[in-house]
Length: 153
Ligand SMILES: [Zn+2]
Image (cartoon, rainbow, N blue to C red; front, side, top):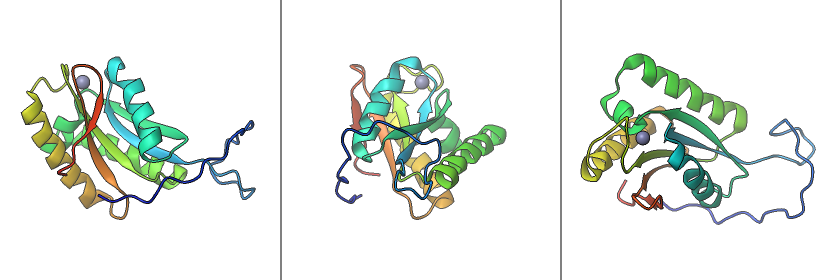
């Protein structure tokens, strides 16, 4: 999916406001990760997404194997919990993009990479039905903890 060019980033910014948009020109830019709870993938995903969406901050919604949960759309309570948290990120932080993450050696979704990619594709399709007008991408974190964007989503 084509994305707008990276915004010029203000350098030397020293102060941060708690408000995302306080009317004083200090708006902070957020994106959203629907990530696994696995500690090994947190920093790689955050670092990747800050670049990918030119974001200052990455809101993290974590579950074990969220690609499986969203692909199956069950358990329903977890699906609703994930969506509620993503909605807060979109509405309150004006998130500019959502990434769904699957990874190697996942305890929550022990399927092969090939199967997990299918889960990612199905889950992204579901998410796009929930959230129109915001880029939604799929990421695969491999056995070297490198982040790879699934391009055929
Ligand atoms: Zn995992």
